[in-house]
Length: 178
Image (tube, rainbow, N blue to C red; front, side, top):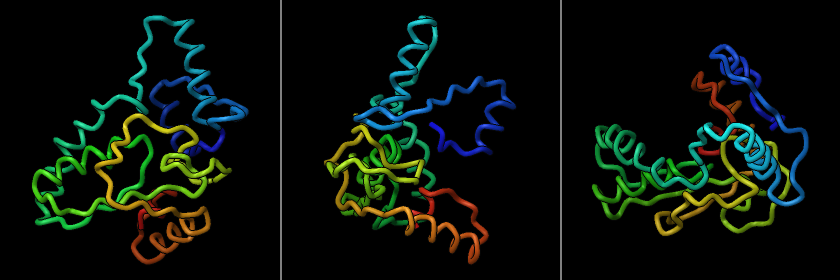
């Protein structure tokens, strides 16, 4: 969608990607629905193309279960895990693996104000990298203990603080989690 980061576009083009940016949101489902509709058109024209189905493919969780959670375990005992929710794969996959090591770990999901993922009304928002106008099938609600909603101003203010205090140049989801 038009909110895509210019730096990411440059990197993708450098790898030879052809970008197709949708111009309008769908009346319901916003940018995600419109992108999925456009993707459906492309897949019809190119039946041999592959789409990993990032919103509803539980296999994405296994990467986080096997790799990220193992790296986190090297830190020591983890009592709480805070993560933004986009497709649900990273937070839920990591949650499952962390719970095998410590059944009492608290899993805190961070969502954008105006995202429908935790059954709030769909509203315009500027954050990207998390939050959705569609409910992703990868979200395992039973794996999450708490949800915190962060508005655009809070997320972007936190990004500036991270850059100023820690020299971490993250996007909106980094600020939201922080």
